[in-house]
Amino acid sequence: MLTAAAFVPSPPLLVPELCGLAAAETADLRDAVLDVGRALSDAAEWVVVGVEDTERTVPATARGTFRGFGADVTVALGPDADGDPDPLLPLPALVAGWLRDRTAPQVRVDTHVLAAATDADKCADLGAELRARLDADDLPRALLVVADGAATLTPKAPGAHDPRSEAVEAALAAALAAGDPAALAHLDPALCAEIRLEGRAAWHVLAGAFPSRPTSVTVGYSAAPYGVGYHAGVWKP
Image (cartoon, rainbow, N blue to C red):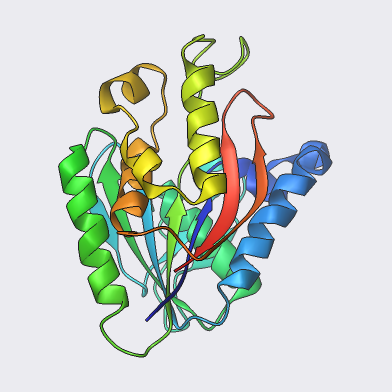
């Protein structure tokens, strides 16, 4: 049974050990993300959807480390995770594991990583398939999207500034705040690729998982502190 669908961003700067003295600059974002984890803590399983260069899945038995980002902070994706921490674990799985460890250590996390260029129809189909799986029985489950907005919102953004990104990012933020899956589904894949809104595929999966609007919406964070759109919140079915 789907108890909630949530979304958090994917930057490694969520991890204080990676930020050093600058950790305080991201405290409000970190707090909002941890609030999302606590809101999902009554679930037995999180199904995570994220985006990287290539498609892959990560099971709940995996362990990872942020060593490649500057600090050997290890994470587990489930209470029975074992083996050496994988330094090549996809970032969405690392972030989900970091959140799980701090807010819901009893939860099992299964991660679906999509390629950024995944076709919109395939994303919608995956969203519908995941919703059917999440609702298949009475076991409480949550859907967690780990994805960013546009990375071209200011001149100092990772992708520099693209003036087209502001309207698209505003539309994304509005859709998340309104609980509007149809608006999410209308994100244009080609334009999103050009403005480096690389989480587009994951947002399309979230839209596909909601054939109707959520019954309630909470957004705890929506801003672009480093020229990249970050959003954290919860949709209840």
